[in-house]
Image (cartoon, rainbow, N blue to C red; front, side, top):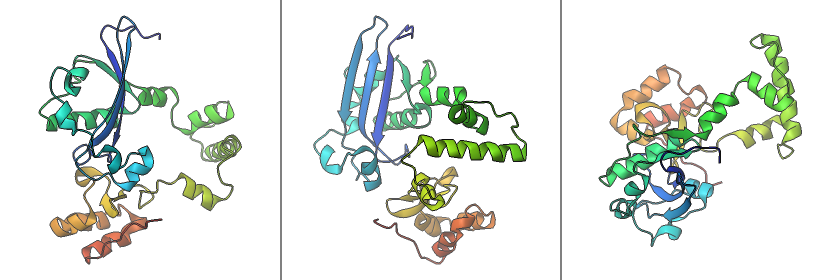
Length: 261
């Protein structure tokens, strides 16, 4: 590698029961530790999360409750000279989207075990951020990537529309597995866990939950019982226009259930 290391670099990835560091738990951790002398160590370990693994999570990573029923809880292997905390201590970190997901999740698990992940004095390399910086996720970036040319009329309404059509045609040509009708493309590119178009509401364990702000991951059922004024605020501020009926229903004590399909 072209990387010049002054201390070990750990590239790691977590599989979890969900995306909330306070609510969810790690079920698998894989890591490669690169040492300054060129030595490479690989580790992979599964954990019993102590809670049920949602079917939505199993559909992503393929790990079920049965797969981890005999594995240790994270807290049992977090401490000690050969524990997880010691393994990560004084190492730089790398991964894909680890700043938003893996680091907060690992830090929360270590904190629950009485340990700490201190990233204030180490380097963190997030390949996702490099990707976003070097290949901007805007229309000009899409034109360069899919069409191999510069977007000469950026931020001119008609020019942006023409560029978007050209990008869409290039995407359909590149990704031959994409459907060829608008409805089917819409369905193929939507997150099935999102209730509304903006993703402000999300299915969590079969119930609708808020997916933003201080009440993230709290279900409408919970909020209707404990803080109904927050649901009214969402209605008044048109947070989820295309799914507002779920908010009205929640205030009336009716709660939708996610289809098993």
